[in-house]
Image 1 (cartoon, rainbow, N blue to C red):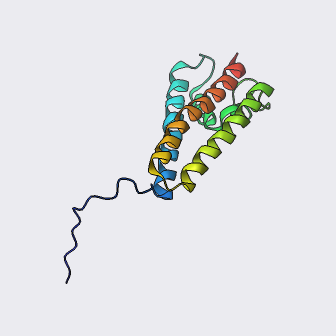
Image 2 (cartoon, one colour):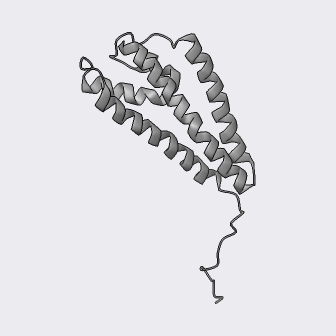
Amino acid sequence: MAHVDNDMPRDPFAPISMGRLAVIYLVLWLGFGLIALAIHLICAPHYIDVPTRVAGGLANLCGPWARPLAAGWPNAGKPPHTPSAVLGLGVLVLIVGVTTASLLTANRVLQYLCIAAFVPLVVLWIGLGFLELMVCAA
């Protein structure tokens, strides 16, 4: 029986697997979504009840389309405002481009750069959801 040395270091330049990249992107997106949910629970107006705050926090994951999904919020169900929708589509295209580039490349450094570019795009995406819900609650 041959001895297998499991202590050998892995290739530091080997690309990150697709499954691992998918988990990284999902954790980042949901992590910022949980932060948004916490903000909704803490900082919502007094006339919005807790289940409605939770619905708004979860709707933030859909970016500028949070307002049509935020059941119970005043003015909810209406389509997003045109500037938010246009900006949201641009951000969505960039998010898809960054994630696709990181999945298709075999360069680990480029994958890390794509992950770094993903973070501000997701923050902007969720910020657009906040903007739409802020307009709802006003």
